[in-house]
Amino acid sequence: MIPARYSASRFPGKLMQDLGGKPVILRTYEATVATNLFDDVFVVTDSDIIYNEIVNNGGKAIMSKKEHECGSDRIAEAVEFMDVDIVINVQGDEPFTDTESLTKLIDVFKDDHDKTIDLASLMVHITDEEEIKNPNTVKVIVDQSSFALYFSRSPIPYPRDKNVGVRYFKHKGVYAFRKEAILDFYRLPMLTLEASEKIECIRYLEYGKRIKMVETHVEGVEIDTPEDLERAKKQWK
Image (cartoon, rainbow, N blue to C red; front, top):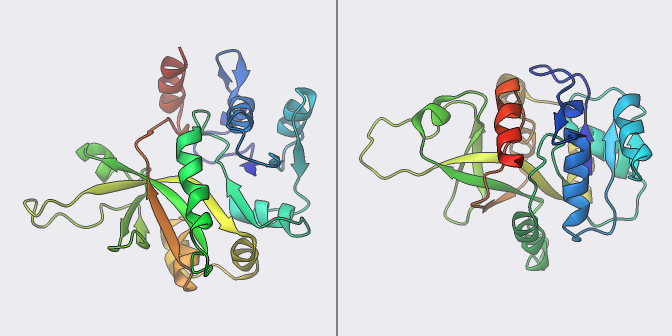
């Protein structure tokens, strides 16, 4: 499932911006289909423009019936009555979605015979100080078993002692959910930590869900700003 809002707050209309001759959202959809990992791929959107772009190019799209605060809510509405076990959320602004990272994410559930993992997500090691401080970069810290402890727009952990060898990780907004976990998310109200940080996956932690983090070395480009789009265009070339 690829949630796709037209009116993104930081960069309105970004999903319909041109990337190598096609809109960003179509590039993302095609890259996701090309992995050959999924039984089905849908764009889930509130926009006629995005819906028509996907369908007119032979893709599959679903129109949201309700207004939604976040992509997880949009996906939950779409899958509620589908017969599925695992749902993958690929962000619409990630046209460089790759097979290797998504395979790692799916494999988490193949080994989880006792169903102790509610969802899994990706993280990338970062070293650039500006990126670590940048509030647009969501950071994650994990325990010894790579389960998420917390997500923040602030640098976590705070580098009071820079000589302890802490590694910083950026959260990539690609998720794999058990269907029950995303439906629980949909039904549970937002609490204060999520509201403060504006990071939707914090809701899972606040309600005691377990998020397995998987490290990937594929950075890609998330298109949150016009500057990101320019970087994406260079990478596409």
